[in-house]
Amino acid sequence: MRYMLKKWPTDLLAIFETHAGAEKARRICEGLGFEDSFRVDAVGQSGGIWLLWKKAIGDVVVLNLSEQFIHVRVTKNAEVMHVVVVYAAPSVSRRSGLWMQLRDLIRQVHEPLIIGGDFNTIVRVDERTGGNGRLSPDSLEFGSWINEMSLIDMGFRGNRFTWKRGREARFFVAKRLDRIMCCAQARLKWQDATVTHLPFLASDHSALYLQLTPTVTGDARRRPFRFEAAWLSHTSFKDLLSASWDPNLDTRKALAKLERVLRKWNKEDFGDVQVWKEKLLKEIQEVQEELESNSSDELIVREAELMKEFDVVLEQEEIIWTQKAREKWVVHGDRNTTFFHTSTVIRRRRNRIEMLKNGDGVCVSDRNELEDMAVEYFRRLYSLDDVEENVEALPSEGFTALTETETRALDMPFAEEEIVAAVRNMGSYKAPGPDGYQPVFYQRCWDEVGESVKRFALEFFRTGRLPQDTNDALVVLIPKVSSPEKLQQLRPISLCNVLFKIITKTIVGRLKPVMTKLIGPAQSSFIRGRLSTDNIVIVQEAVHSMRRKKGKRGWMLRKLDLEKAYDRIRWDFLEDSIRAARLSEHWTTWIMQCVSGPSMRLL
Image 1 (tube, rainbow, N blue to C red):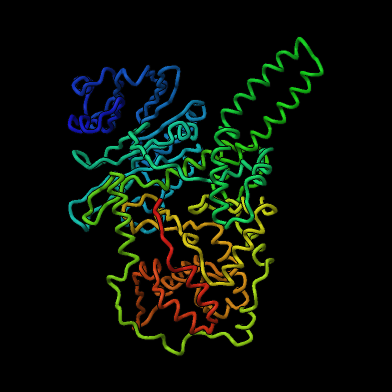
Image 2 (cartoon, one colour; image 1 turned 90 degrees about the horizontal axis):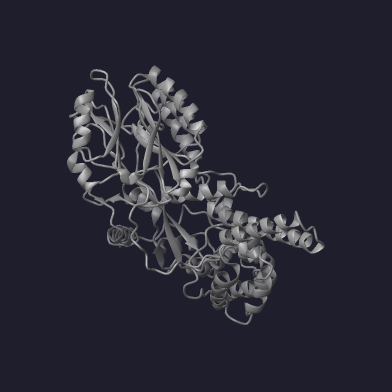
């Protein structure tokens, strides 16, 4: 314990399953260097919760306690937070009573709340080794309680499980019995807070290390440009756009010029919405106070103007957080700024990569090392180092070919209407590519930028040449599992420039009539009405049938590693496939220009 406290210092420490009486507990607490403590002593060899703290944390007051939890209020510099440390009893019946007690407690707390400890149960089937793929009623009850209390799991880095038992593989079992959760208010207050599962040392449980304000290594790189949809509602935006957009410039250069103008305008005119909101609120209060003693027409008009401006700022704030929350189902109505803000924070925390295991199984948390690991991983993945070079030509049979009539229809010149349709059909708040512009910019500013965009796209279809950097992309890594430990558990998603996506969507729109012919019936993607998740149902049905099958002749299920087949494809194979489908040379050039040659940067 002394070693752990030296390596991972803390101002508040909770210890469970103490197995120590009152006098021994007092001596141990004093010897660990904490100035104050509170204990729920063990009954014989059962239970026991110790809560120890240093004066630096602030004023600590015990509000509630039982054999299974201690609830304290911590006050420092007029800021209040509540901490509940939990040691849930191994007995299912006693744990059920605990959820009822904590439900009543949490409902009475209106300040930031953090609750954590050993809950002695899990929430998801992937939080344990083995098992039958089903959750126990106790786990389902725990999960329902978390949802009812609107608690947010603060996540973790480090080992996947927090408890383990068994010295032999056949008897080994591990679970995530310990966790730290918080309310939305706390998650918003400490957005960078981290939870680390420390190594198993002197216990069958892993210690949980919570840092509310961890040391953050600064990033000296310039913050990338991101177009804010809230700018569109500003009264001066359209005038600024009309004055700044040069239709005679190359579209990419015009976008770059506009970026410089918008950066300056955002800093000098649009400003911080939160600051402006507070300033307006103060002015409204002052005017309303003055109106009580002097109800002049001038003040009444001024109040109406301020209220109108305040409503616009509220709308801008909501749009900002809606845009960042990436919620596909959002419909603007009542103000939901706090919800969108919370959703954004949770998504960012879930997707943030703070620790991964390298090829030797060693945990790496240093930012530079993580970046080097990721770059090397994708460099190997997208190389031909381990691929057979002598690839024979594609077989003449097996590929569906288009008819001459279909080919002629595809080769018809592209119309401006097709480009406009591609823009309109994009999700407005899709994540931007390297240039920072989202589809909403093109959709709402089409009168100003439309001619330039159409000219850019039609020039590509005429020449078959894509200007350099147009198809460059940012690569973000999205977790495939709840708490990824390896790079293989992260899914790469490319964020392309919308200007490039307009071209590809125009191409896809033209190809739609023949897609059902080019895409085989066994392929579960790319066709409207088909879902890749259908494959999961098919596999489950196949396994179910295999289990129920009787007779001497059995079935075999073979699992193939398709990681590289899914994550990469050879350009020469793709080009041969296009020609085998009898698409014209124009189409071969367009498609190969789009997919080959881009540079990618990991975010």
